[in-house]
Image 1: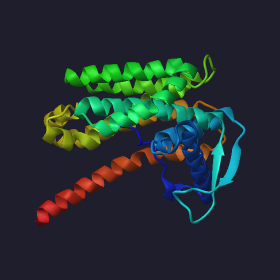
Image 2 (image 1 turned 90 degrees about the horizontal axis):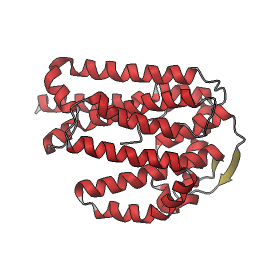
Image 3 (image 1 turned 90 degrees about the vertical axis):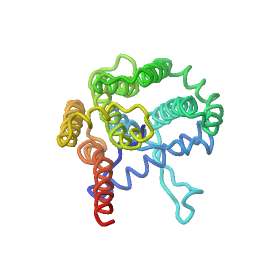
Length: 285
């Protein structure tokens, strides 16, 4: 489900593109530090966004390093790391661990089961350091599984679960002055992520007879379905942006605004483009 909070590189300055890549590489390296090479396979845009947001909000000192990347061996790379990047990497692993378990429970994918077993020792260490966040993820998976089994029709209710877990993960520090805004920001972004994921999978889930709360909406709304989806997601990102703008984030603010106001829509636009191309091909054939 996660990995939708991307950056719009075309609208970034050259300097901001370089800075974003440094955080992305830093997150990748922290994942390797925590879980080895297998940890690098868990790298996603959402965690990169969280690391940049927390780094900017708390204006943390950064450790910049030039290194050689085995995946991109043609030139030297640069990475940024700090406590926020390490935290984002830890949360990435926790979410990935439960995602693998959930996939195994759903379809018996033994490869996913082996991945979860490999991550278990790292997950146990993270659980000791961040018990509140890990419990939130555990509760999230349980609520989501119950909703799926019950074929919960209420989109607002089921998307709240993703909002609630993201709200907890965004609150890095306990009893912090910015926790309320971080909580709200994570909540609305989480709901957006859930709905976008369901939007992308609707056709596939309908064909397979799998649970997706947007199937009922699509059948009932008809021609107004796309408008309803767009209005809902726009409202959610508007609330997310309001919470962000209340915080005094100056460091990397250009990158963060790029993601919040533009980057998060890139996947949505890509999905629509693919569907338009599919319709054109059907008409031609």
